Length: 114
Length: 109
Image (cartoon, rainbow over all chains, first blue to last red; front, top):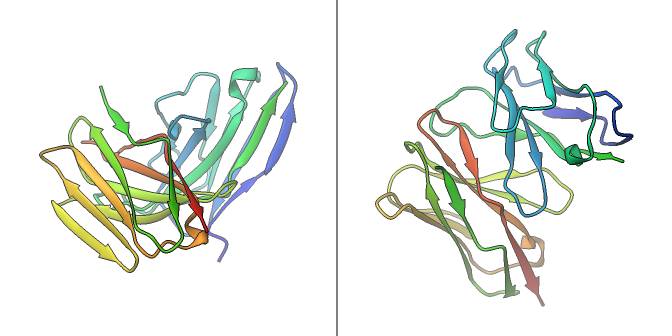
């Protein structure tokens, strides 16, 4: 039972390069999220999805794009990486949106942009 | 605006009790969560409160006062493995989570 799997775990990019982070969950969850975590700041929501084929902007969406072509996968893309996007990225999922919607997180992807 | 405040760092002794406070301001309220995050790892769920009062779960308890916009996480019989960051998060009217920056708890022998 893998839960939420993120790939890659580490990546170093040069400014202007592009890349995609993959999140896969095997729990049949409807809702998926991409967060970034920076020192001294709380988790900030980048984009989220309420089901297959849907995406929505979160708190800090600029510079990122997402896609949810299959229910189990949620991709986060950086078209032209900037040093400000150096961060740890977490994917999370939950089965429903209700009061006690506990998030299951992936292990994180550490991205450094030089 | 929406905001969560919690102390940046706390230190406690093995075997003791520690209380981590959290105050919140959100547009609507649908519950208060506590997550634990060990260094370099993912956050994991600890507790959820939506009604006022104390919820006890083993060595960990969480308290909520909706009128004061206040919660705390109480950790008893501290163990070295409790050294971690503790994240407070409040669910707003759309059930979106607003996260605090986390409290780093250091346990000393």
